[in-house]
Image 1: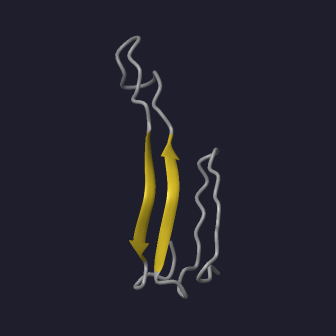
Image 2: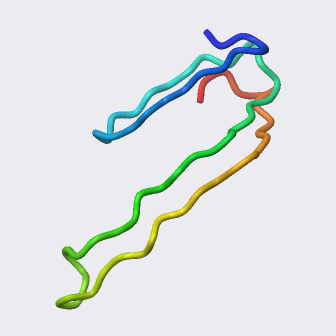
Length: 69
């Protein structure tokens, strides 16, 4: 269970999801979260590449009415 002041780091590389009990927390701060870029594959024309990915930084999320994220 997450507590106020905890720092929790998640690293995703295999697509598995993780949930966290935040029932004792009012807000979550995301320092950063990177999204992988796309690649050539199904739905792309021959030789076309996907995008560069993206990043979310310094976001505060109100989780006062949420028990699990």
